[in-house]
Length: 291
Image (tube, rainbow, N blue to C red; front, side):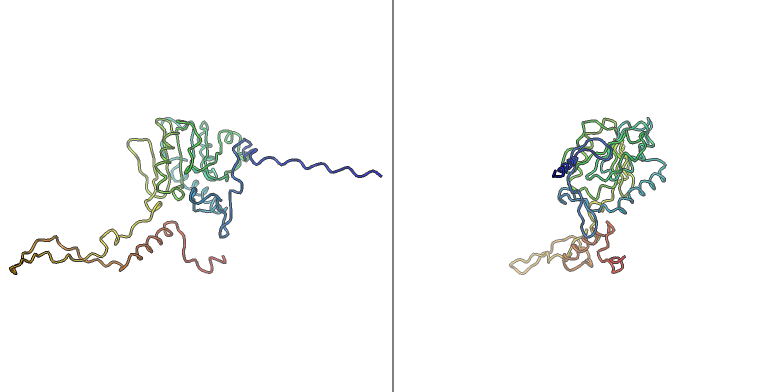
């Protein structure tokens, strides 16, 4: 009796680094780039190296698209920069997120090439886009806080950065701008969009819808900018051995302020300010837990 033929060995799995969404080969991404924390999806990188605080839940990612749509409607363009000589030839979107800004810009600037750079692979698959748009877009991944940007000097004539301030520590801005300056061509433009007011640098072609100071660090309460424990100076007179006394003029005494009695009040105020400026409710109600 003949025994049944042995089953064929399973086909080897394709390596994780084979292709990205767009069908192009890219360096292998870190496996398990997400983990769940308190029911929300966050990146799995070390928080010291990538301190981005927001989750990657679907409703958070959709806000990015809504913000871009609203801004484009209000300004009538995908950019605040007035390109008097025509749109740029090659644009870098640093911290591109899902890539919605690049996609809209590619439709409005039909001759421009785009590179979207972000920490994690959450970009819209290019195969879902029209070929006239997708062939001019490339997604790249890495951590611009810890490594040099993987681009040549003077490679781009426009750099776009939007809503990255919450993930960039105060001591990393100088290094980041040095890298932006390196990859930017002479005469190029940088566009930074964060919460705040629009500022124009008269010496460089830089348009900044610049970030409020409290985006990076909280504002000190007004009472702390004055002297704590302000009190009257001691008697400035001098007593001589013969019993006489000579008074020396002293500066006027600042009126005592109504300030907290200990430094804990300052720490508490700063801690609350950090959460308030990031719209985080530190005392959620029961309805929020069960909603």
